[in-house]
Image (cartoon, rainbow over all chains, first blue to last red; front, side):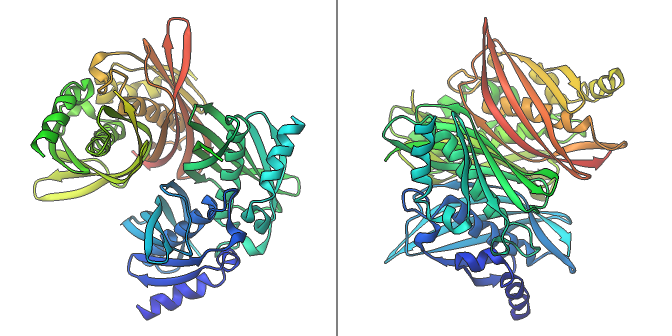
Length: 138
Length: 138
Length: 138
Length: 138
């Protein structure tokens, strides 16, 4: 698992966006990846919530990395499509996106993800994703 | 229409994320809004394409603003859910997201969006969105 | 729980489509409903699999009923939108759709669903849904 | 175009579900297919509207056939995933689903669809779909 984590971390750290957002790889397991992001006013929409696009960026990346834990050697993963439901305002001190591989095909995988918002003692689900990922050579 | 543009521009400019990404409001019409973003390596995924989450942030915002052009007075718009298909690698010098209001209900609206990538003389669709927006007091 | 089941069963049995498909309410619990359908060649697509639209009808209904278990009195539930991934060919002797309520708002609920195909000893997930339901007076 | 129509019609007529629903192929063009369905109380949900699953079955099939008009020889088309928004109650005397191919890849295509409800002189959009289709040998 350390090898897997190292391999994912090295690709995570070259993702321009993850650095720009201030996100970090929180945990890596076979078929499940978690990404953490502290709140920042630089990432908000008009009402001061974390922007739906940032919420989606986190959980898309967590889902993509979850798929990557089982991608064939010599392959990387790209997003084919995804759908996100925003179930509560994305308000919190920090956010954790959890991506889980549900089914892994030779070329396409399906993942489900969730974004949790942490505020003091409270933790709430703010978004749910269902995504299709593709294995591509690279 | 100038009033509408001014109203939308003033809310656009307080969106932390749009500033962080370097996006600007390109055009505003009744039920249709366009947003432009120059490419930046700070916004990429592992293969150097614009990250799916950034593509989504742009077109989500364009869709939300398209809905906002017809929202009742005293209301703003939040994303209930959306779905994005990534139909080509998001490679280009600049990107334009187009959001169109398809149906406007009292509380919920449905929008469709598209993201175009411009490279020299070439322009290509890289993503398609279908989204549900809600009018909320604010 | 018997009251809940009776209430749901009486509305299930007036659904023209469920009768036409040959589906039945398999189980009802707080926030989770299961619907069963035997395979029929009358419900297939071109390759002889259960049609994606039938798979979707089952799991949409299971999700709607899951939301209905927590809808305010005097309200029924309609589908706002849903998204289904078809992860394996829908081949089997019978199919079970499971709908689960994930978050229940005053007006909108979000559900996740799954469709299982049973063949002899084998059981396989053939579809995954994420859905938005609305409470409406009725 | 007559050849194309004949080829699609012969596969349409072996689809168990389309016969069970009472649907027929209304028009076939390069990248666009329309399917028609008269209302029937056998296809309803609890409120007497056409069931969301039937609405989806129609527009999924229209989208799949739209993709099929450009599939490589020796291939058929299966639904990878789709998302449907229900924008008005599906009430009408007859329904027309329109599927349009938006982008055709070697393996995956993206389509958009719409379902119109006709009642006397009135015609209204009741649903919008965005779908991913796959070309498979067969």
